[in-house]
Length: 469
Image (cartoon, rainbow, N blue to C red; front, side, top):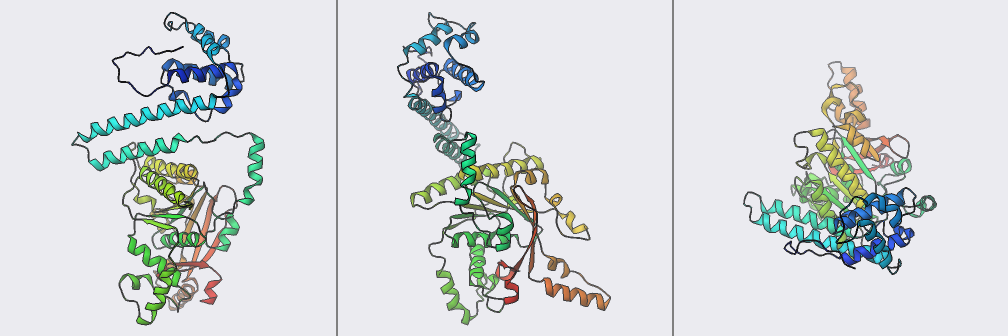
């Protein structure tokens, strides 16, 4: 039996009418076959509009726990025009009668989806040809759209299981301990958060000079040294700056045994430190830490680049585990909400959260706090200091707020000599203290953790190292 009532003059596109019929017939013979195809194909994948509507009706009936047969579906199509010389209810009966087996239902579903994929690829190709002739659109813009479309097709073609029964969910929870969480590089932070986990989205926020980039490069280096794959989107710093920072960090032993990253950048490394610094540089060989200095990237850009990188590393039996973005404020929003900063931020934040789940990676985004904190007597940040905090606070699994009291103490001046001496004493105590405030944690407590920080060497370590330094 064949159904093809499309005009012969229409452009021929890849399709499998007979396969669509076989799939629908199999589902009508045995509704249990639905569970083998539900994660593979949807109504949108069918070429024939009537077949798409029949599939939707089958899905709706099974979803409501009803037995789905030509008889139960018949009333929904009673007023339809005939298919050839038969009414649609009769056509439904013929679909069921002509099906031979339900065992091949998953294969039929894969074929239906493959035909849809080929039609999508043809549409992208036609769009590319059309836009290539449009001189009002930059080739790079067209290329980005086409690349994103192809990436979406490749990523979406492989079926992904999103439905599980409760017994599977419970077993997965029991096996969580078998999945070793990734370290933040600070024991105290790991203890209160359980470490960093794949599929989760983290925000690290603070005012300028609070140590956001030190935090970012520090966890990137800690993950890479632990054998994990890290990709660092440096929208603010170029390769040389990132390289100087991680080299200074890795070389650091104490405040008296360090080479500031500015000295590396400006070629002012003392002669006695040069050879040891070269030895330190050799320790980076083999680390899976990529640095992308792309400017004004959109969420779509980051998604496409990350997908390509993940596939490339997987071919070498390595994995992409962590994505770090420094920082979100330099990402370029889409045009959908142009001018509406709250909506633009929400779109970017939700896109990064989806990226974490889609690629099964931890996503860490740096965010700059608004200036309102500067007007308060207590400069310690709060969640409300997040720019457009509603979306960011809602999306993130954990929000870290960074605070360095020494930054504000350094700016204070008192005419009273005793007060100024107290300020100096306090400054000396807090000069290398970074307070990491766990302001939101979806699955744990909100705490504050102190870390040792040496901004000149881009170093963040456990607080215990302060005494050793």
